[in-house]
Image 1 (cartoon, rainbow, N blue to C red):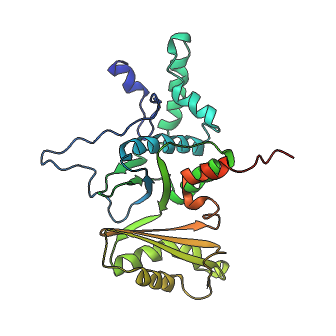
Image 2: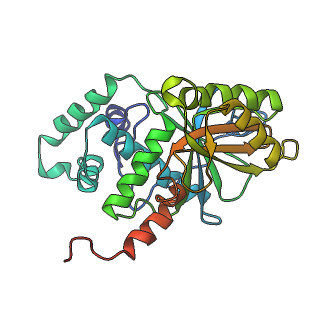
Image 3: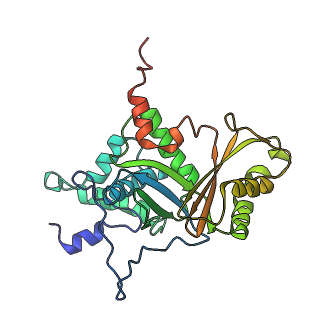
Length: 287
């Protein structure tokens, strides 16, 4: 076991450098004095995040999978690693420290690059009371749509299995209250940059909703309200869209994002399906 002083020097807020043997498993957060889980009911209006689904009874293991996956994606975003092999070397670079005297210096060099950005808790797992469903709160510089899109395109192009338990990732640009007023506020904030302006007319779009544990807003009502915010000058096209609006309703909160046209090609951001599809594709390099 590594001593306390050494572990402290190797840890950086927002990034875990120690690669677990196998896959890291999420530990149940300690409870407050009143017995409440600090990660329960913490999805609040005004935040951004990523929904995830997983196999039945694998929520804890999937959370560990996602922490590894998101940290690796962040390092790729920073340009510190480019490939899966580099990720393995980066995370595991200090496991064989008895073989080299320069490993500690290499670790500190990489850590210093991250520390300069002063990012803390970029990916904060929040418990939800739905089986097979997870939520991660994100913070800048993470932009959920671009971040998830990159993970999925990398998985599709490489054909490498990204995780064992993770299924679908759904980025949420903004979270608000699950009321008509809250939905309208979120829609205006998320949709205006994509659909309003002289250079954004004539977009083909589709709207997809997902409602969990909520019975106030209806699917038809949500679609109608979102379409009103999108406004005139655009055309609904459920298959050949330019932009797809995702709306997620969970209990008393709603989230929204706009994703590009390759959403269905990327198996609706389902990593398990991306891997299965690539595994069954013929070798494109064969003639």
